[in-house]
Length: 200
Image 1 (spheres, rainbow, N blue to C red):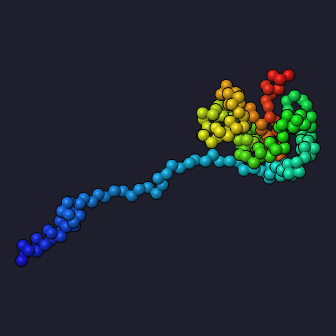
Image 2 (spheres, rainbow, N blue to C red):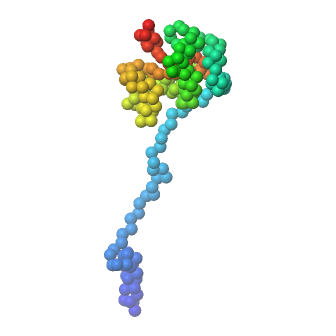
């Protein structure tokens, strides 16, 4: 009877270790997988726009909605030391000339303000700059240092010639605008000083 009991226990143990067809089954204990298995993307914090900057953008958008170059010129003239070009032309003459060449200042300004911005510290002020590429140092702007999407966006803004200039160590050569943290509209330009000097 005792032998039968031992045989029964052995049979139960063996059946627990097998999978029913006579082959042994092994149980392995492993640590639980971590809760996060996907890579974590690190986002660069963006400095939020100040109230004066938001107010200035609202003023500009109102002008863009009216499609009024005259009002844009008036706003630019009201800003102290505002820059629209490096040739010394008035804002009106410069933007009228651009319109005749197919460059619509109003449309391009609107597109800039719809996109991402960057910041630069100038003295004790923060400048909000569109596009974000224009706020980068020349070394950080190299296409090889950007991801695929940003590289394509940069090429769309400056073209192949602009990319070549960036690779040669120049800062962002495309259209750009900036507003200081106190709400002053600083510039809206599409060229560099070097380009102006070369064309003269």
